[in-house]
Image (tube, rainbow, N blue to C red; front, side, top):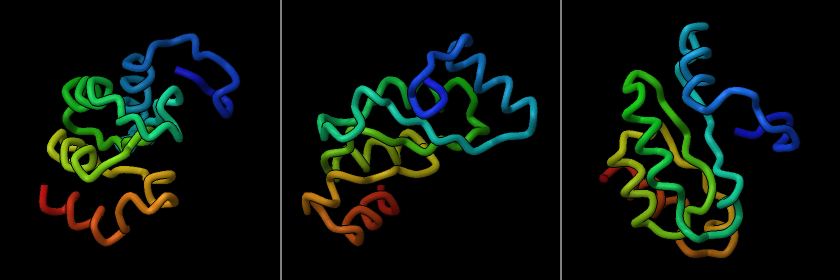
Amino acid sequence: PATHGWLNDAKSDLFELLDFYVEQGVSDFLCTDISKDGTMTGPSFALYEDITKHNTAIKVQASGGVSSLDDIAWLAKQQVGGVILGKSLLEGVFSVEEALACYQNA
């Protein structure tokens, strides 16, 4: 994982960090796959699936690569706590209303 505005590599792996922060009482996490951010090539489905299976009590906000309503539906079905959208909205791939309806009805 990267820290400090994606400038430094963390000394722990992602799941060690998640476990540490859960022990501190944190339950909501924003996770951005920086290799996907702004690419609209689809999110890191396996990453979010691994996180949600690792600890079902946490809520992860998925960020990076979302390019379609299908991406949003898949993430919602994986029980992510939310989806961060950027370029897909800026480029008019879908509207905020369509994205919300897709997430809520998945």
